[in-house]
Image (cartoon, rainbow, N blue to C red):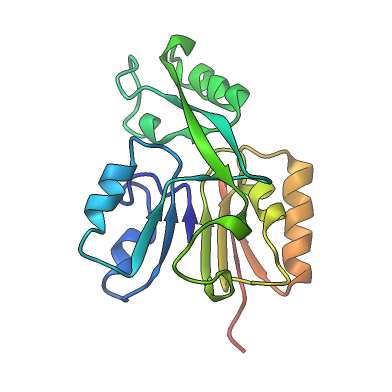
Length: 193
């Protein structure tokens, strides 16, 4: 279950595995610009469901911020950046020397994990990938670990405060996860016995 599925191919570690391994799941993506690409990619693959929503603590609408693909000197990955945190997207603009007038806003629907209308019960989630430009740890804190412990959890930590990352690592260790910490991402997994 990727949250922040983007277009379903670019920088998606699951894309080459879904069909050959006959995986099923729900791809969560709030941005309307990517939904047609996701739907087209999986139109003939009924085991994957696309849900256009952002995950949040409660049912609401929120402003999602992104950078226009046609921003001057923008790297190819820039239109894949999207966040509910305007300060985070402004920081990305500064880091990439992109004028803030290329920030785009889109109103998106938000639902908590338990309300996301998935075709597959949350208890069956085995792989959880969160790529949400700084909200990954917050979303993990909203996950019901008593109800479901995915075998693999992958999330971006580079935009999060160190204290928040340290806290979630401790929580994952207490749940018997092993950890692989890379520069920008953390992968937690439950080893086979």
